[in-house]
Image 1 (cartoon, helix red, strand yellow):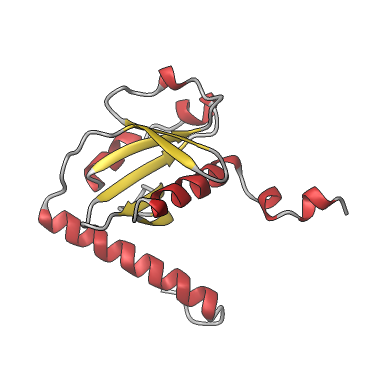
Image 2 (image 1 turned 60 degrees about the vertical axis):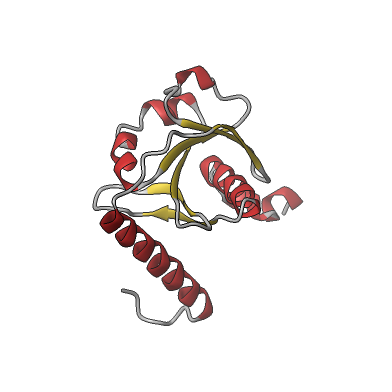
Length: 153
């Protein structure tokens, strides 16, 4: 089997590779991340990041023009975070992205915040829900890694 098929990156989708680079960069900024978090029924964000002061950021990773144009749910994510960002690679036509959102240029290994998303602070009750959801999701995933036979739920 060729070596490139043995590489873990070969099993990941382009958006997942972007998410990994975003998470690495945000970790360097003292944020922790959970990928594919469900803030509410019918929504799934690519990356939710929790900052050192409790700030909640959502990052949507788009690997192509078609991927962006087919996303009709992104505005529903705005009510679940303090800041919203798009993460794209260097070849993405960034002029498609709304200017009143954050922009992160990323690859599979790192990222750079090009434009800070505007801040719209969550209400305290919503923040509490999101921090608890973040913590429970992260804890359940860690437990599943440590004990794959543990019951789900």
